[in-house]
Amino acid sequence: MLDQFNRNIYYLRIAVTDKCNLRCTYCMPEEGIKLKAHSDILSFEEIEEVVKAAVKLGFYKFRLTGGEPLVRRGIVDLARQLAAIPGVKTLAMTTNGLLLPEYAQGLKAAGLTRLNISLDSLRPERYREITRCGDLNLALAGIKAARDAGFTGTKLNSVLVDKFNDDEKESLASFAEKNGLKARFIKKMDLKSGEFYKVENGEGGDCSICNRVRLTADGKLRPCLFSNYEVDVRSMGAEAALKAVINNKPARGGKSNNREMIEIGG
Ligand code: SAM
Ligand code: SF4
Image (cartoon, rainbow, N blue to C red; front, side, top):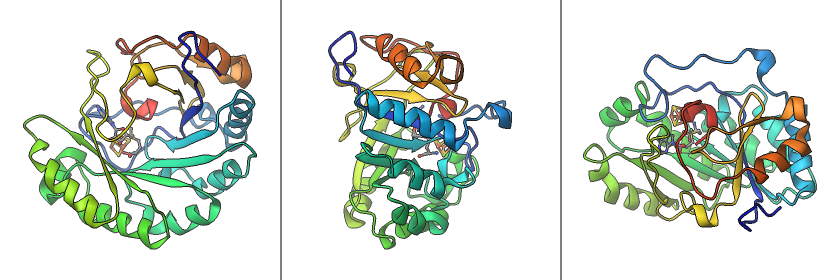
């Protein structure tokens, strides 16, 4: 469906949970976020309804994100349900990879098309510092599990923070090449100040060609990372909410201060 600025909006990013097994410094505050009640989180049936309504409006690309999508119980079943919807051409996932040894094969069999794996450092101590708790070896095992399960075209998402890990850009790029991954570099964004950049080797961050909207785990559709506008799919109904969010998609990002990145899905 076209928005007011003639951009074709066909890509829906779906945050399936607000929980995570890491606590990345740029994504969530140190004290964490107030988690939503179970009853606030969309059920699989409700997510399926949104995806079906989106397909009716011309969407064909979908991505499961979070929080960490792999901590949502039954995630493989959800992937299977969504991949089977006629009109869903791409069903991808963005993950920190830690749980891929457990889920990669199931996800592949369920019809998940592609993975983006987030990894910002190849140095164990730095990885732990960025994620506030993560074990680099588990992330590396996840990357291997994705390959072993037969995923191809996997992207390696690295957030670069000036003067912190930007010195690893080359080593991350060569790690990606050696492991059959496509390196993508994302400069750290700041929702509150409205600082964002084009993604290197990706299409994000360029407002003129933006093609996406976002669904939060608690059922709010958002037209832009850098906007506070959101509509509720439960009270409006999926199709009306999708039309509203597309019609209210701003020409370019501004600022956003009513949710943390972990709640919007990146
Ligand atoms: N937990 C999953 C992961 O980390 O891949 C999916 C959710 S995470 C919010 C999605 C993406 O957003 C990740 O690639 C993450 O690095 C990115 N991200 C989070 N906060 C960011 C920020 N402040 N600036 C740029 N990218 C960010
Ligand atoms: Fe969790 Fe992903 Fe945010 Fe890191 S970037 S805290 S892994 S949701």
